[in-house]
Length: 289
Ligand SMILES: NC(=O)c1ccc[n+]([C@@H]2O[C@H](COP(=O)([O-])OP(=O)(O)OC[C@H]3O[C@@H](n4cnc5c(N)ncnc54)[C@H](O)[C@@H]3O)[C@@H](O)[C@H]2O)c1
Image (cartoon, rainbow, N blue to C red; front, top):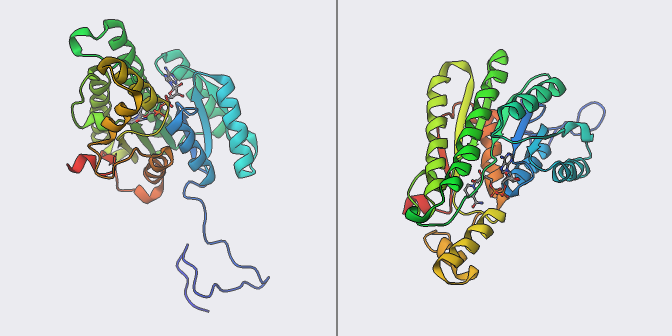
């Protein structure tokens, strides 16, 4: 009998006594207890599907209960699993009572938490700083900074008892450079990166890893809104705005949400066991320019 390393089939795959080929491809997140915020949005939905495919239990957090319930049913149908593996937990990430409630509910249903994908966010306005509305600035900060921080904090509390876990924060290419007319959003994503790095350093010895993904433009509702707003500001078309956003990207296109989900899945998994405090661009080469 050839020696077989776990997870690597000998070739040809040996048959066991019953004549069946042993399972060699367990899911990358088998049995992981995960929670995703902004789960029904473009990137959240793609990541929920990837996590479910890889065997995770996935708690779905967001503002719209109906959208989340539809997503739960889709995940159950796609994976052939019980809908109870994908609990719907409506809530606002920037309200501490909501955050407290949905983390407690997830812990009760799953018996603990291994992964947070801290992803909910809003784009705010496309406006020159001198014209940017104060209230809009505060809304962006409230959701993107306070929201990310409340969820980070609560996830760490949930993970301390099991001495391990992975938190992935959605930052942005806008966490790595300035962008015109998006001052509140860019400031908020620099803050997300700051809290990612601080948490990773603080939690180094705890077994809890904290990383950020920094996508460039991704083909979701958010880029549609940004292109529409830029078109209005610049008195141009939405199509020209999409072209302008894609122009500095060496690979000359937006990311698909699935491409972001792949990197998040890696960071969530044990394959990333020594990866913490990073900010991984998913940007078709933009950050290399
Ligand atoms: N689309 C891009 O080009 C891009 C690029 C870089 C980073 N991002 C970031 O990715 C994340 C996901 O964005 P997306 O592109 O999927 O956009 P999206 O608008 O499709 O999804 C965002 C989701 O967050 C939810 N949400 C908003 N405010 C919330 C709140 N207060 N509480 C709970 N949920 C809330 C929305 O309802 C929505 O489901 C955001 O943090 C965004 O800033 C997006």
